[in-house]
Length: 133
Image 1 (cartoon, rainbow, N blue to C red):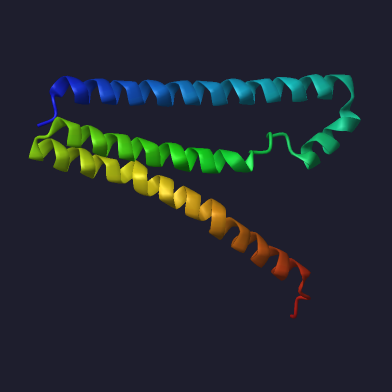
Image 2: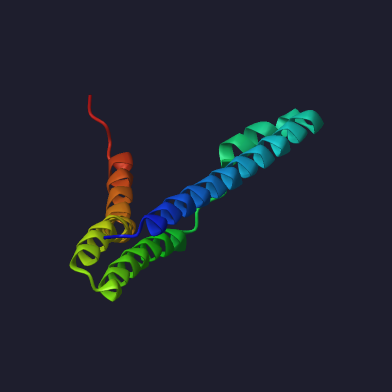
């Protein structure tokens, strides 16, 4: 069986990482809003250009690949940890737990590599075709 301490620290570590990620997003949003408030106070004519251009930073395409690879690596690490433990219950439990990040990572990479370009091509084709009605 998986030791209770390992499970407890895994859950606590995961929760701490998620809290830090949310705090960083909150700080980034607050910074963007502060910048917009300053721009509105100084010159209201630039606000439409800021809003039209988008105020969120563009996500890097490599980020999806990195996230997918990180999830797959996490899944492999969990599975290998179960194999190192050697107990049949540990192998079964940790390999089962490894399926979630592993398959999620594969889905992220598949979406990024094949589905997103196909969806973008479909939108471009439908935008360029004349509408009948």
